[in-house]
Length: 537
Ligand SMILES: [Zn+2]
Image (cartoon, rainbow, N blue to C red):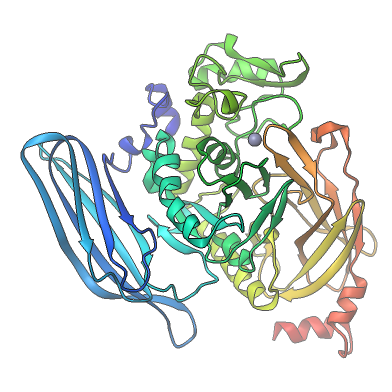
């Protein structure tokens, strides 16, 4: 579908995707503060451009609570009301409208806010989202600040405060992160409906270099977040590890570049020491000149723009980009990120972004088979893991299939070239199958060395330092999964493709013995089979 759009010349500098499908919105709604406290006054604002006649502001309020079975629910507390109407009878090109809710909202509120712009030609456009107001009842969950829809059909960005900021500085800064950094870029600003924004009330920390200290609620953040941003104030060298990345709270180009990796699976277009591969679908990087040239017409560029990655010293690697570095604006995934304030996502990036949006609209936001059904299973898994395993980290992201009813969740600690099992748990949920970015192959092995199950996760040992390439983390923990079968004996953790590793440093394959952990888990039962059977009941 989006290829048609591109061929109509739509996908160049400005994203016209939203205009073509879900309704172009030239009215932007916002609220201040983003998460008002209990009964704290809130200003609801909207700003519309075009041949505009009128803006109306509306909200509806829900109360968040738990039902008898402990499930989180919401029920309608105030039916939708119109709180403000701002008119310009003869039409103007810019109209702003605001309303102050002087008494604020009670604790545990979820406010669905809507701004509608009425144009002179009779057409309308609207901007609508939900935000938490008053004390949030589940402080360890991601707190919604601009949620436009179901997480399965949206790209979810979660902000985490680091100790470099006070909670006040962090919360005050988020408004400009969303409205001035993200939305200033047309891929975000013109497609606001594709994104949900949340924050964590619990602090994490980021230290140079690539040291992410997760907040205690990371499991529930990872369950919802597609990109998890650790925000800080100091000028530091930033890093990405899986879906986590660090960024200054007031620097848009790092935010956008890292979000490009995390949300859209875009590859770096600079040379030479990042991790490179040609994505299987809709690449922005090609492993041969011929492949780049063959694809060039699909991204509306001449073949001559296919350029081998090279650094300033003339070192090259065998990958080709097509998105230009110059003239400005250059591609934000390449060297222009550092040199060109106007850098943005160009055509090859754009095609992948549109492809992601397209999948989102069909409820398959993060791709690779991440369907609504599998994501519901993922929620169950995370809930169960959350109950039993407090410090579950990033590996709860894989995709699930329904070929096992009982699985082992194994926390493996990798220090240098050794791996050992830290914890072994049983989870009643289907098995993970594959994750978004193939880096580390996890194989569950039997005593006779046959593969019982395998899937791929981000390699937790690798973290990307922006502009510097990948570095190896010396000590990491990762949760991996295997079927709870009596023949399960060990896990193999294998780098998927040595050739893709940076700086020539090969990561070794690791084997961990699961027997001691399983024996301990099943202590006091007659056999492993009986132990698993007991769990099944
Ligand atoms: Zn990068």
